[in-house]
Image (spheres, rainbow, N blue to C red):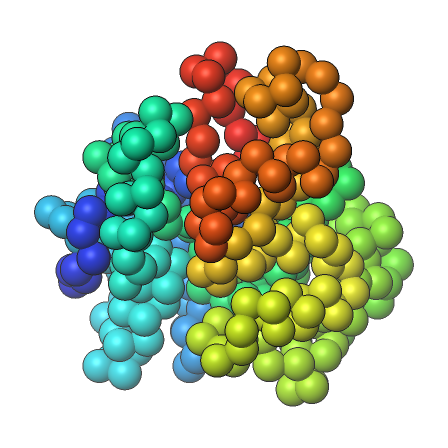
Length: 299
């Protein structure tokens, strides 16, 4: 295996990034916690496929891979890993705010804040749509079906497949996605997203580092079919905007327990509970220690 190392803005913990949410459980990610290895099947711009094995290396990360890459491909992989793990993200201001809040006081010590991302926004939007109106087991099942049925295999390991490209999904029809992949009502949303991306009408990657304001980005996300307020709030956090709490049934339940003595609450009350965190309120909610009651945030 060939390797290279990448630095991260300190503090950095690969384990904290991996376990930030459930993305590591979705194909083509694989995680071996005992070895501390996160594996991802990557597709390069050249069309080459490879498995990346990511491990902690000092205050950064080590990427191991086969086969040998060109200088251009190595640079591409470096950018890919930097994005996926948020190696260049800084949370100093957030950590300073956390020091006087017991429910967040361990954030800096545990290097929490970075959220695991897929290499492409297309993949993250698809996966986010697959989280809507279903149990987490359903999200995992639908994602695995997409990869198994439509992902391209690594030549040396045919059973290992990458996430399907927009072009591959765009060639399908709605019944195939609805029934074969088990996407149900989400099928037309995924198909339209793939078709618009494959045709070049929609440039999702340009929005990863867009100069748009947070409000403009949210409006743009809400314009994508299948993306409602909850999904948009989650995607905004993946894009580095934390000024909104993604309110779902779990948020309503936990905020009710934490701040309202178990009384029923509204979405407005959930947001009010974290309003004082300003531009960091979504992250404060996401990392909150919910009274150590053993109830962890759903993936």
